Length: 534
Image (cartoon, rainbow, N blue to C red):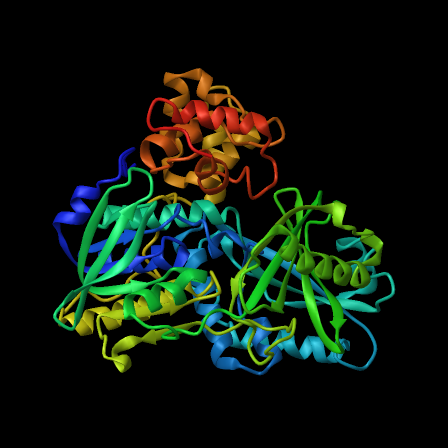
């Protein structure tokens, strides 16, 4: 295990001049730091909050493979999604796994069996190399047609009025939180210096050139200067504000003009297969995805026009209520009400491709803003709404950085180089071996969870429990998260607050299983190391 440390090394950040400074520690920023560091560049990364605390936390847990793009006959975009899904299944097999989807068919229109089957056939052609380099338990089968009886068996009570359906496979995250941590871990191993709760507040200049940023440590109050040849702004929903601040003018990057929502419901109704439900609002037809995940049900993603982030829970609730009504109309058998919603994932994102101002269907494109056109070649801004393509965005950014600083860097290897935490064996074999070994009395579900969350680092968690059996205790009775995960996060993953532990080092928050007890256990884990903050 690479120990990031309890204390962030702010002195190392301040005394060095880096090739690249990354602002933002979500999945895009983490991928940029990993890629650049693996190419031999000196890298710093800071985030004004905790790592993975922004858009990265708003997720339907799907690593898309491009079928939605094919509905608009965008083969180029579909191929990109296929490549990136394959990359994640290759480099993070413990955290990404196949997920079966069903789409219902009936009639002779857009839902016709003929049209859907043609789409599946095209998808299989476009994704013919989808399993290249992927381990056995992560292989994605081809799509196939389903009879009405098969549909009813896979998704009971949902599509009884349909004549059949189609089955295809995408990929799903076991934990978005652990994926961000795992990518950052790789960046640190390659030499990157990272710090959370450090905010870039102003530009540093060397004459007319952007030379770095002034920053403030929100935990200790220290002010510091961070210097770098290039700056990559990967601040997610805050990217426009960061760009304006560093450019010294308003409007250098267009702010995100949409809000994306994913809702979590109690239980999964015994459904193990994701499915799409057709819906319409304001006369526009599209599909919403219903996804079983960790004994919960996720529904999304809704995109609504929104010129600024909601300033209060009351403002956000207008969008949530609208989405709940839409789901209830499209899926009446579930009898969804606002009280059915356990958790709301919401955040500002670009509006979907080709549908300004509406809750449209289809993924938005990512965008890289090169501020060289504005006279500041030292600054790049990444607008990347999809976790799936974050690695690809990072590769493009690292290419530009290397070219701009005149460095002949190593070729990009992030699409094939497994994360250090990935198990050496197939994940299924790693789980079987862990279940059959010395597991210090931990239950099957906890052992499986630890392998899925930490991969090759599983043994280090078990050793912690051996040394201190109290760390094997469950944090919450209905979750496999154990106290050792909190201890590891505090001492080795720069967790500084209670919410860091609950929401961004474990999935207690994202599975809606955190009670007051989790906060108490988290505070106890933090007490020896840092002042406790909520």
